[in-house]
Length: 209
Ligand SMILES: C[S@@+](CC[C@H](N)C(=O)[O-])C[C@H]1O[C@@H](n2cnc3c(N)ncnc32)[C@H](O)[C@@H]1O
Image (tube, rainbow, N blue to C red):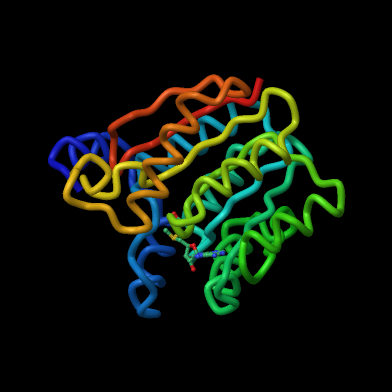
């Protein structure tokens, strides 16, 4: 975390629920790649501002961002979260339950692309999307989000800078190429209104017109 991010986080009181989630993730030896505290607060704020009732998360890990998203849900709203690893989804479910959202979250385990196709078959539509899984599929996830969006839905995506690799012309691996394509798509797609922030590891925001 940068000094500026640390400064801004220190302005807020500790969040024991989310601190515990981070500690558990560390103890369980899971990857420590949950969103940062202030980033999580932004997710809560965005879900709240958008009035979203149906939220879709792609990439659950231990449920840190899931709790942040669920905290912003409108009355009666719910979160669907897609996760490849069954063990991670179980940890996330436990954390969401401990945070009081157990009855408002459901997990779909397996390849997110399969779960997205299944959600379409079920006629599911969403008001808010948080994309935070494998980078190679970011362009696909964007297309799926647009397909599953209610009018006015918000799309947020993490890691659009890939720790500088996105803007380094010497880096051209599959993740980098996919994220560059995703960034161009989100900036230029006429179905979207969007903006990008260089905060944290890069945050893209869009609204489906
Ligand atoms: C960066 S972590 C998510 C962090 C989480 N959003 C948070 O901030 O608390 C990415 C997650 O995506 C999952 N993932 C990776 N590839 C996936 C795929 N093809 N389908 C579904 N989930 C996937 C990983 O297992 C991992 O848990």
